[in-house]
Image (cartoon, rainbow, N blue to C red; front, side):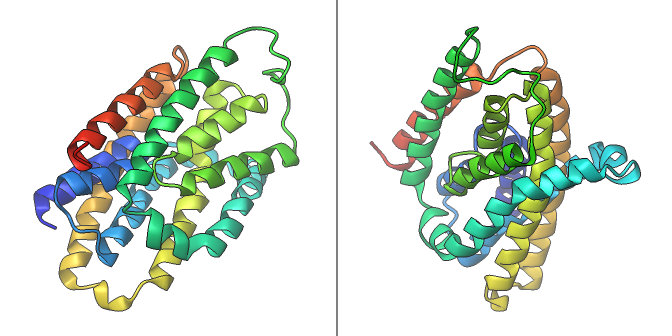
Length: 263
């Protein structure tokens, strides 16, 4: 993988990690378009550079997360993280061996997720829907565990971790902005654990000096673009819903089906 390819993938990761459009899915599809073979290193690269994006969350919310340490917030994050630990350990080989790198899975997930997102927003905006709980509801520990189970679906490339956690939070009664911020926070242990697990499970022979350099460039590129994306998204959700992202998912899935699968 050359420098240009590395920069493109890092920018794609930084932009898509926190938007409800699937960073892993976009990395896989762009890798296909750039003719990058899905080797063990590339698969690990696509997982680990997400830490650069997560670092942007820590920097932006450093005061809230670290300086003014909020035990209750961290407890909620850990509770929501539990399902990912369990499912990640159980299905790691399946996810990395068969799902990551699979363009068909990504395209179908993007398309299906886009339709679900549009339908969700249509019904969410309607008043007095009985299957929704009040927006000012105080969530319990069990509610945060449920959000964690929503996140598990994002292990399927193309589904989007942001999509599942934000919409899961909204379904359980969180305001859109609060659900979006909690999605940022939940990404910290989730992506750190995913990267650590991948490092432990991957053959050390793939880590050459060149690969370390490629990973470092990808890490910094994803950090910078993620920082800007988070700032944008927090402002965006205060006055907009996610319908446009749903439309985007449908359009991009069709485009990639044409370009990658030659349909």
